[in-house]
Image (cartoon, rainbow, N blue to C red; front, side):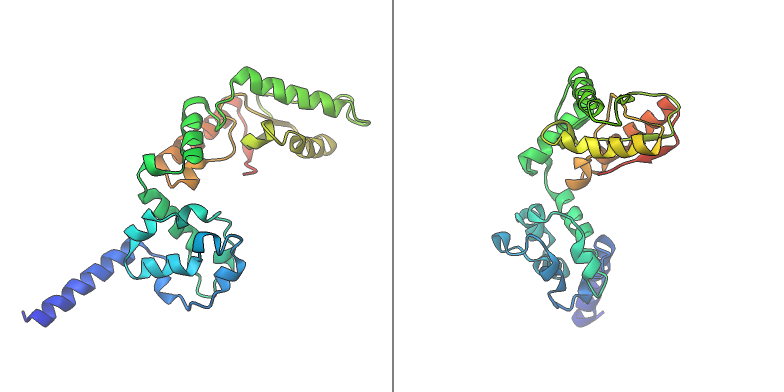
Amino acid sequence: MTPENSLRISIENLERTRCAQWPHAQDNCLTCAMCSGACPVAGVDDFDPRKIVRLISMGMTDAAADSRWPWICTMCGKCEQICPMGIEIPDIIRRLRAMRARDKVPGILQDGLANALRTGNNLGLPKEDFVFILEDVAAEIAEEPGFEEFTVPIDKEGAALLTTIHNKLVNTHTDDLKHWWKIFHAAGEDWTVASDNWEGTSWGYFTGDDEAMRVMAGRIVENMRRLKIKTLLWPE
């Protein structure tokens, strides 16, 4: 085999390996800037979705993973929706986050995920405090005309619908719980909330931690089995 053929084969093998690891058609990028125009955080610390795509296309995955850029992205998906070549940029971002050592993941995300795995929610909120907050919000709703009989059904076995809750709704945005609950009440929906493992935001997903994501999703499935519920509303 000539040196030229050996080099060609080595390059082809490297290319096949790279494409198997990053099957997102990033080499089709036109650098049209449609993604950059749609990105809500483009320009923050010089972040640009095109630069991430270009780094991956050039095989510079370690440099991309070590940068701050993957953690600036909100993973809103606007770039993917508007990309004329169908490049899956949010999935690229998540794969880059998965490459980061867990102790190098930004603190709020890793701390929240550790709380969720330990307690069932990102806040580490004790069960009795969670139930108190839900019942307090329900009491406020019951003071409004037309909702006098309203109560929050917690751990109702056999309900038609189980809904998870975003942690901020029992922390800083409790009024936002009322909108869902009023709709359920007006529609005559048979629904419930689990008192354990109620977290609706999987920071395992956002940090690229597949095992943590499986654990959290599995707990929700277990709640549905335990309470004999067939339909899930997962707002987050």
